[in-house]
Length: 271
Length: 263
Image (cartoon, each protein chain N blue to C red):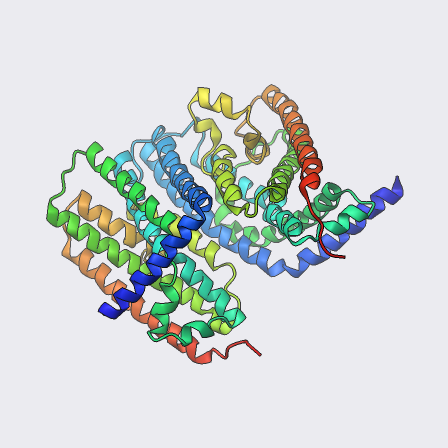
């Protein structure tokens, strides 16, 4: 049991070290995301002025808080280029070494993903601190303690869903030579249905209810909406957690099936 | 001039033949761009479900602005994007020697080598969005207005091209121009917003005047929506000349530092 855990602990530590090498990349990316935040502030500021009252029952500051929360979450739980890394390992044959070792490839990759997100998550704090004098007066987080208690597991499950989707796309390299097109196509869908373009509760009610059943909702929007107060009903959060667990299991199962099927097609060349 | 046009035609022919060889790839990437355009359109539609105006622009005026911004971006993607980004890689690997050996202006050769038909196909969709918005607004522009709009789109294209060439030329000094792509897309987010939304001196100075991505899309849209404004046209033309001059200067200064990387 401990030996198994130890293997992945080492993978995690190696992941931590290799991601710290790219600390400047993450830091620069973090600082550039402030531009995105500036665009959000300008666009939504103008939209709220035009509306004259709140939008979707929320104030401008509540909406801006939502976008800031999403930005921070993105650095803590989003899959950045894990799909590309996995597809490259398959294409280059680097995956062969994992077939000969007593290590689970998903577990190994997930350990590295957790390490990478800890590094990128820690590094996004710096630009947020720089922008804090401007942001401070706009941030209005709700105070209920259940939001932390339910938001943290939702955040973890979102990370599992994010990684599982990236893993599934990466494994497509067993069948396709080039997967970047699929990845960016899915990013477009995820950016809308994951709530990155606008809070999903602004969608017409019928569309919102359908979106709540899709995995994209649980990739980012769900924990973001809990922390930022866009979801006000605790019952809705508990129900969401159940759907989120179901999606995490479904995606993990799909990843498992693709791995087994993909290996059947895989040809390891060289010695 | 005619010789350069013939060279460009030859590279365009090569790019189209290449695209026909990888048809599935062309289909997927066209779909990618189409999806991202739809994402932006959907965002505008959802926001306007809850508000009447954004900085004085109504829904269809905003869609026209979005279409204009997309049109410039699609042309940039279609005509120059791949070549300019490959330039960054080629300088690092030493493959840039290939362009130095060609009988023509190096900047022209390096930045026009590849055409991306998927970007160009979607420029038709972007133009369709502009026409749709105009119809919804019951605006019937004259031939002169349309010509002026096209000229301004051309100026916008020159400005975006110049900014991109200058950014990628940094590779001559830094060896790596990673992150430029992300930075460019962060900038284009501002090009989809009305100029009036930018309040405060610092914001205006940075996004409207220093980096003219906002004016580049706002000026043609405003011309076709409101009225012909000479100062706006002259300003855009002047800025295009200025940025192009800067790009040529920076590129050639960088070129003098290029030492190749082969053994």
